[in-house]
Image 1 (cartoon, rainbow, N blue to C red):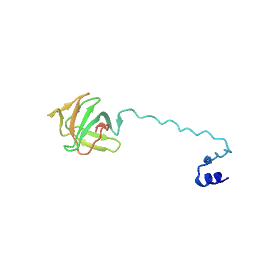
Image 2 (image 1 turned 135 degrees about the horizontal axis):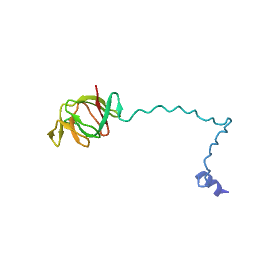
Image 3 (image 1 turned 45 degrees about the vertical axis):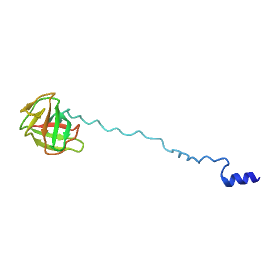
Image 4 (image 1 turned 60 degrees about the horizontal axis):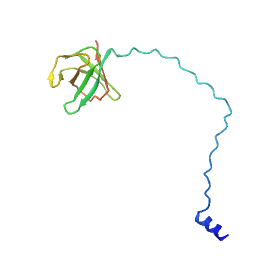
Length: 132
């Protein structure tokens, strides 16, 4: 008897399992959710009057230069581009482009060129050519 009292006071006896909550009983059957009609998909690569031509693959913040890889078409000095990403959204006119630190007037599909930009761009941002 003294042993039981000691165990009870010291807490070395059997431990009780915590009580579990029972789930409430559902009274009404679950109704099927209404499906929204499918919206017509926009053609890939078309955004606000521009064609998607490439992506940003690197960005250097000290000279403020974005390295762009072209997926299609060509890009010339003087063209207007729109860089759009998760937190990026700006338009810019290309003043100069360089490949391996040498100025080039034009780049083609598959080329990577450094372009001096006016704002920060991030890797993965999409590049669009703005058509008038």
